[in-house]
Image 1 (tube, rainbow, N blue to C red):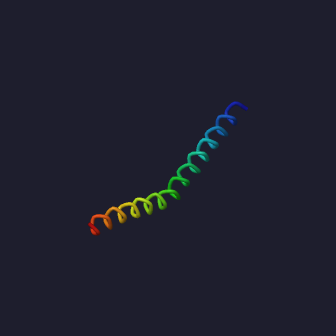
Image 2: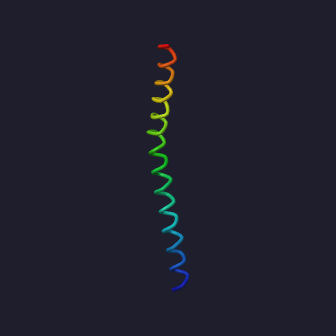
Image 3: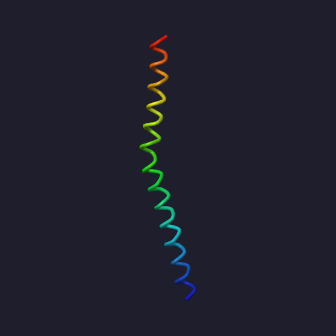
Length: 49
């Protein structure tokens, strides 16, 4: 019975880690786009001056 609970805990931690990493991968696209937009805005400001 004790081994089964330990295995269950490992699976639960693995699932949480997988969900967190999937969320970070999904967010990376939006973070990258935001970074590009800020970079473009700064570039446009320098070109206008």
